Amino acid sequence: MIWKPPERIRHQLPEPNWPTRQEAAASRLFSPLDFGNLRLRERTWVPAMVPWRATEDGYVTPEIIDWYERFARGFPGGLVVEATGIRDVPSGPLLRIGHGRFLRGLRELTNTIHSTSEGRSRLFIQLIDFLAVRRRPEPDTYFSRYLVLTEAHRKWLENHLDRELADDEQVRQAFKELDPDLYPEVLTRRELESLKYGYRERVTDMDLPHIRDLPRVLPDLFADAAARARDAGFDGVELHFAHAYTMASFLSTRNNRDDGYGGSRKGRLRLALEILQRVRQKAGKDFVVGCRYLSEEIIEGGSTVEDAAYYGVELARAGMDFLSLSRGGKFEDAAQPKIGAAVYPYTGRSGYECMPTAISDAQGPFGRNVEPVAHIARSIRDAGLATPVVVSGGIATFDQAEAILQRGEADVIGSARQSLADPDWYAKMRLGFGDDIRRCIFTNYCEGLDQMHKQVTCQLWDRYALSSPHARRSKDGKRRLTAPEWDSSEELEEL
Image (tube, rainbow, N blue to C red; front, side, top):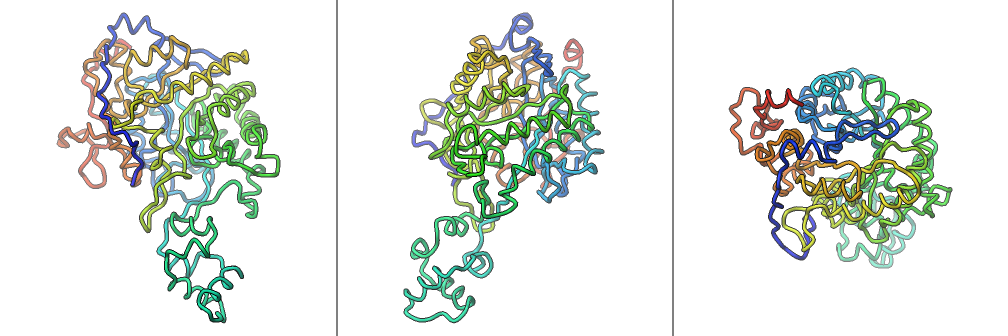
């Protein structure tokens, strides 16, 4: 079950007050940004979204090309390709960049986007590393195959059963017959979690050699991936330091590693800085390198906005070309998955904060991330640094976006769900056709598909007839794979 706020207030979409063409031309939203390596024609941004359209081996598909080409036809200032795995390991229908064999498809993608946007949209690829997460097992399977037996297990069971257990097979059989209410008495907290949620590696598992070696291995993995991204024609990379994954876990205040890569803000940030330095060395000083990280973790004992402000200042000082802020989306408070499913990091309160819906608390779903991001941006400016900050999270009107920029709370406006609902919405605003915008209604229909690893679409698209000869369909044939077209050829030529 997905976490829901105790207050159940249905929020109406804000009145849009769309700009005229002249008002848009005079706005900050549609003004250029030029900082270091980062040059944007306008301050509009489509954040990374995983559409589950790659092959099972991580290759670009025609559906991937269509997905990003459709966003490019809306001419955003920046467009970020989905989280893309930097290791050459199986990871399902998620794009990968961990080997040179992926470059052919990625080059086709960059060529298509640059051609479609006529070079007006900067194209970045988000680079991600993640640790092992297993599906929630059947209890019998867990006790038969996964539980590492200890002498403590044996002794507890023998005392409870008042008999000796001759071998491991008898110990495992005793576990299978045990009343589940007694599991907390015999299993450690971590073992109980693996039973109830599925096994999940942590960056603090220092007893595992491959986890202990992450600081030695990751800088080259990220750097090699960034070099491939440059070879493939991307304008830059966004290092994924957010949500439930490896690098966010290093930045978390829950990271208590004792090897110099945890325990303090400086220690937790150390690997991120080493990765940035290595990426610069490998991909070139003139290549755009930014990162996405969290303004707040929103979990017990997690990082706060003050931690994020410290990281922002130090990452900016170290030479990041942009800082993109999200929030929440952690494993630690995720809902228990069904047996046979993997834990999903957007089902707890932290996940809700990442993608709030129209049914919300009194604060509502619109711009919940703005205040913490503004604090981080002020800290960066107070340190004498001008690194651009990208804000996202429930931003879906011109007035809202423009006010954020005018107040200096951020430098670039990211919008994922609204851009998904209408990839042309930025272009429509710029040209004075705001009334034509198909507005996101914040039901998280898209997020529900993502949770099931189904091809992500929009509820609003699926209201349109599927009979269009140009509408590629989902695998089940029930949904469009790209947004309906805007019949606007003459207007778009003016851009």
